[in-house]
Length: 448
Image (tube, rainbow, N blue to C red; front, side, top):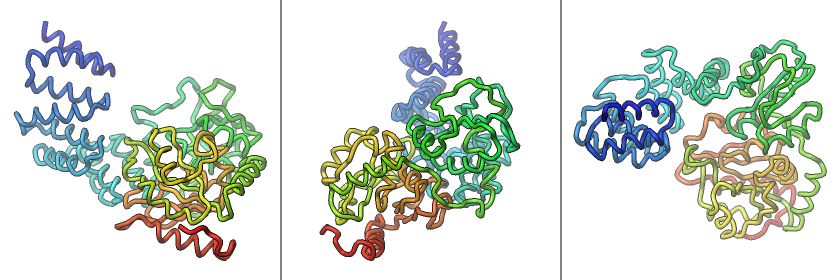
């Protein structure tokens, strides 16, 4: 009976029904609380449900009783990493390597740590080890793509980038049973967005190069992006969810880079999104109500826990120094109720909810009306770059691959990158804003 109960739990686990699997595991743990198999399985299910603290406790208990379990050390490192305890994760993975030698999983995990730390060369070192063991490992190839993109090795990076389409959670739009587009002329092409809205904005820079090769284009994007895409390309059919049609071929928007961005010279860096002139004028008038130019948009938080919010955010109090200029918030607030309170604590005005990320057509119009945007790494960078607004980006020492290792992003000529040393580069950016706008508007900025 107990063996059947365990097997039922395993079957549910394999089906992805982790809550029901945990019901079985916990019932069995009540009878045998230190069983290694049960502790390991329950911890894995808890991790998949994002209860990583519970997984850490269970795995720690297991390893106290049997410290020779390399698989448990590996999973413990993963649980720590999911909560961004990177030092603890590295220690666990090094222990797993000591016990079992190189494995694909641990080598890939080590690579992810170095990639997060802005060290793509070391990431590739570990991925080379992983791929030597398993040359077809999808996760290792995907991580290698991100490391190569960080190094701006476009020609080889985009080929590796295609491995994302083999990842477990990839949405290939299977209901559209049509060939993948190969870049040759076609009657009706279906292009679909992927990943986050920032990536969709970035990859929209490729659309103008696609247009001559398709008589008709249907473009599927996130609902926040749709109106801005319609304003820019009124002849393209823009939709927000997978829709059947008379398409001849399909392609994910990121894969367009394999056709059109294989060399640095293929990045124009020029603006490519066109917000509504009426919206732009509306925001110009709203900004005038706040004070004299220059008008600066500010953000201070980027991402979520899963996308390393702590590395992409600064205390709101620190951006108060920029308020010597006439500033408005362009920080999205829908992910955390505390963000609004932080903004109010520094007296930063918000025009409305749409222009801080609720609708990127509104945000793009506001950005076009602004003189500059000062931001951490988040979607605002891509929106500013796409409409050509001067954008000053504050980065920590380990930004995402999109920001590379240089002072500029090849995607956007108007974007400049300022990397954190010991302190956030606020003083340097203010000096550059003073130097630039002092010659345009004189010295009428407000006292800090």
